[in-house]
Image (tube, rainbow, N blue to C red; front, side, top):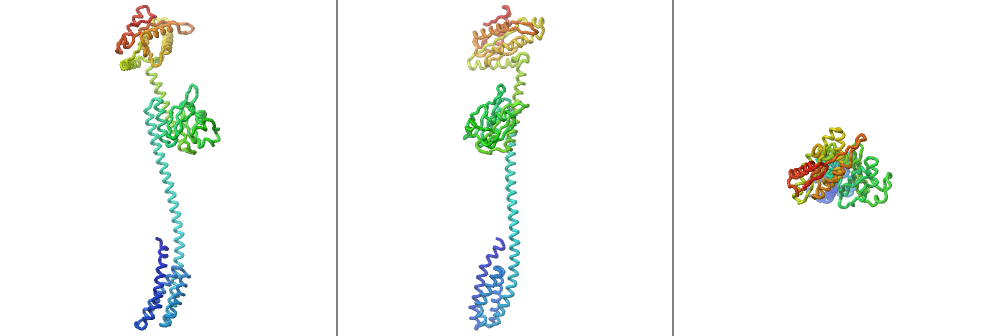
Length: 477
């Protein structure tokens, strides 16, 4: 409650007090004249009190209130005070002038104080509004900073998860899920991978809210192709109003209105495309695009690392000359196939092949010609392999061919077709043709053996039998 509010509350109190004093001076004081000896003391006291009330009216209501209270006093008390003593009326007039002067002075001071108070309160309210606006702005900044920190933690989580992923499938799934975790809501996350052979995008993974439609343009739309062609990030606030694009056909059927796209670029080549779109206009800002850029950079590095890992793994498990698997990897896979065949009651064939008289060939024609022969045989063996078959360089000039779900008759036929093709495909080196032959031994699991070492021993045994029978032939049980 302000002082001026308290002042307003004094007005009715003053009216009541003024009315009471008038009534006492006008009614009771004259009737007491015959019974009280010192009536003048009571009368003067009441007149002083009423003059104080008149001063209060001056202070509270100004000139109008002060004059009105004086006139009312003079009218109501004139006859009663004259009847008592004319001296009383003179005292009342003197008290009036004194109280009026003091009351008017107080009134002026109160008005000045009221104006100062009003100005001060206006300044305080302005300061309060400025402080409140500053508080709201700071609160919004803190909220935005908190969201940024939360997004940074989510980005760290993406980086941590990607650091343990070495396959394209895991990386694509993690990136799509974590990106949707950041943007969420009614947004939709699309991750395209680039088909380098045809230079076109293929939709690999989608994460979306329940109310969003599936993306029908599996090869990407006009916005995706623009980002691919220009190798730049893209922000579109309204696909129907962006002057850079002429939207039509399937683009109009899609439920996206605004979008952001980040190409996954590594060493000046595009690996894929990460897209987030929304059915709402202006759903994304430059900040959201910067977040997507960071996710895209992390994704591109992860995909590149996965490819390098696969290349390193291939170097570790493949022979550098022939491109076939190495002996160690072949033995591990053979062990796995033995267990699988026992568990599923299936079969497989093992072909062991050896180049006839290869040492003499190297001595006569040199190791360059020998290497060319090995590469040629490696290519022939890979061309003969079906899905799931394992072909390895078992030793120097010895090869192993594991054919899955292959019976004895089919395995012998396969081995013989390999032998014939090697014999019919000479190696041309310095315009000279070099022809070699191979011998092959065939064993079938579990018909010929039920252990890894035994199946190898059986295939080797028939290989040596083929060598003993004149080479360039196939032997089996």
